[in-house]
Image 1 (cartoon, rainbow, N blue to C red):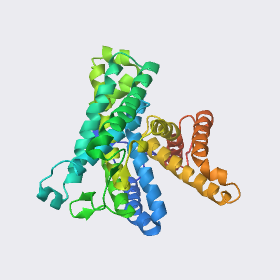
Image 2 (cartoon, rainbow, N blue to C red):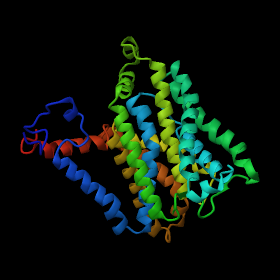
Image 3 (tube, helix red, strand yellow):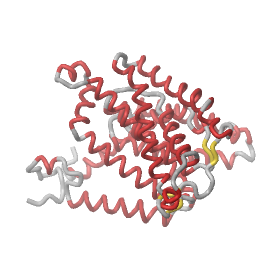
Image 4 (cartoon, one colour):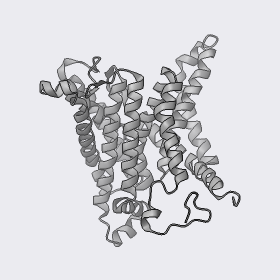
Length: 366
């Protein structure tokens, strides 16, 4: 039986076929083409400015992926996720700058890769600490506890104590050549771009596989009705805390990645607004969809860059516009969320789903 196209006229014969990543040759071809564009087309065609925009998109995807897991798949609302990105970034930075690595570790370029894993684990454990209240509270009260993670972590622990290590004041400088993976020194936007692609692909694949497992089904059951899930024998507290760990783990990787894009790191890189921004990304992209995380990140970053490009030519006549761009950006962010909640509450992922169905079912597109 030919399986070139699905779902029109073709049916799966086994559980393995039904859960395959790439179910047809056509889908495999699309994915190969996508990889060629990402790894070859964009680096070849884009200049350094748009490569840096792609890096910002990747960072947003990595940050929003944990938020999507918590809110979209486990039903645990969070408004303090930037704290776990900060924990990952500072853990990685401190391990690189302060830890007494053996010389051969530094020569082999192992310090940064190991620091990424350590940062992910530390951020995951830190996330679990602030996820403990989810055992007793939910909804509005859980929002407040996750917001506490932001203020306790960034505004108190990092600003008042961690930032003072080594007498540096508020910022940790990252000298050129510090970020290194093996013999590969990450010292350009293009190298950061390739590292971002690898991290995004690995983490998205890991999350998708996790969601297809028993753990993912338990998370969805908790999201839909935690009382019914508990009656069915699911350990609700255990799975909630594991969701917080995985979300924090991903956030730690995102923070450790982002230091490669910075000359110095300070608490100002992880404001509370960034936590709110990540929630807005999944609302615009589509809650409960991995595609929504990616589409929402692309939409928010690209739209804000285009908005900035539109404001710059007007700056000569209205210089206050450029000075107030941060407020314009925040206003545009709020308006975008309102517009999507009114006109497209299911997000961009829903439109993508409709477009795919129209193509796959054509000419019977009803």
